[in-house]
Image 1 (cartoon, rainbow, N blue to C red):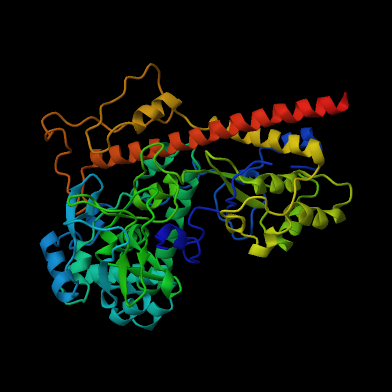
Image 2: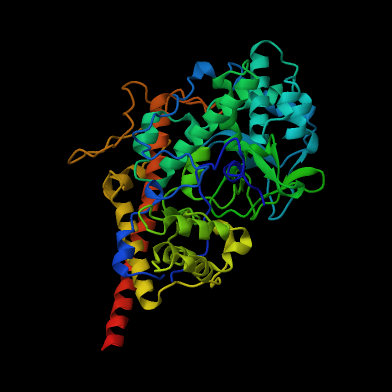
Amino acid sequence: QRQRPAAAAASHPALGAGGHQTRSDDADGAWGGGSGRRGRARAGSVRLNAIQEPSAAAPEDPVAEVLPLGRADDAEIPAPVGTATKEEFMDWMLRAQSLPAQKLELVVDLPEGRGLVAREKVGRGESLLEIPDATLITVARAVAESKLGPAHAALQEWSLLAAFLAEQALAIEAGDTGGAFATYIRALPRRTGGVLDWPEEDVRTLLAGSPSQRAAYERQASVDGAIEVIRAQFPQLTPGALRWAFDILFSRLIRLPNRGGELALVPWADMLNHKPGCKAYIDDSGGKVCLSPDRKYQPGEQVFASYGTRPSSELLISYGFAPEVGDNPDDEYELVMGIDPADRWAEQKAAALRKLGLSPVESFPLRLRGYPKQLLQYASFILCDPEDPGELPDLATEALVGNAAMKGLLGALTRGKRGTQGEVLGGPAGEIAVREMLADLTSDALGKYPNTLEVDRNIAAQDPSQPTKPLKKKKAIVAEVLPPAPVEGTENDGAFPNADAWVGIFPEPVRQTQRSVAAARVRVSERRILAKTDSEVRLQLRKLKAAQMTTKV
């Protein structure tokens, strides 16, 4: 299946974790060990208070930390980027790259910007695109085309490809237009809308309360670190060019599943837009890259592909958009929990988890359809309080047996499965205590969003392609950032003036509106999930306590 860059970044050493810890993906509800009161006392042991792995570099206070350097000004992006016309790009694809006749055409004024639209009827499962291998920018091709020398090949794959894009764009700026991919690079957008392009103030305010804020900080910091490493070898590659290159990679890079997950930029295929629930994926078998649509399309309809099963928060971080609230079946809230450093057996618990290949800090997806049983099993272990710490390895195995078989990756161990081995420790008292902890966590999480739900819903309901109408507010809203209204006289039949979806250049008020609406959609989606989880957990608690009272009687 086709995978776009956010997942790929998670395994890239130069880029770190990409903003997301490992997760458990089974969905259901079912704890133990220690008293309920002690469990509740530790309910606040989320990432900021938990024992960190040695490699963790997350700041303790993302608001108070020294923020990353400002996003690149347009003048810092190589000037030739975005200068190729649609006609030049299509001529390059058809003539220089031998792209066969297509049933799709490139349209640049869609709500999403660029996209591929059916010229004629397209059948379900029909082979589309058929992009030749020679068109792909892979690691091997980048090394072959680059003039950076042997040190270039020694870079990590993401950094290698970013260095190549920056090198080529700067070469074109210097007058060398003979590169094999010069037209493609000139046709790439100057900005994608991803978080690397966000002003620091917008990251701080628009993502306040959301786990995506930390993911954004981690993404920015990891790219800043990668740029530093690259420039230590190649100081001629400017920070602005490299930041633009990483922005392009996060929004367009594909892992080719039939080639061992090889990374590639695939011109033409990267014009496809994502639609939640779409099951059409890139197929790279047979010496060419194709798309098999998951449904029929009529002439004039936009053809979509899947970027993978991504929550709206990940789509926002990498691609700069979020589906309308309720449209994304993959939405989730990333709940992070870990061992309380004040726990008398904190180090011993961490050691027991690591022995199973797990971390003393893990994250779990809460979804509208439920939450993973493994969340409660994990919580039951971090809350248990044996008199003898020598019991902890056995308790970890009892709670989490089976999880180590997947090398401790809670995000992969039960994807699509229910009823995994392991159990909640502590019997009925443990079942109650761990749910009290979960209820505390969801309640605390809901209280971290600075806006009222009504305000967020109103912002999320706005059309990001239309000028913003400021909301009438009855009282000041902390950290609320609303895009400014259009300047009088600049309206263009209700559309944004001077917006160029092909080049990726929009006036700052336009871009701020797009960021504000997308971020509000993420916040509302997360709050829906938290509210539903909180309600269900409290209902479970009432039933468990009633059953416990009946048993006592």
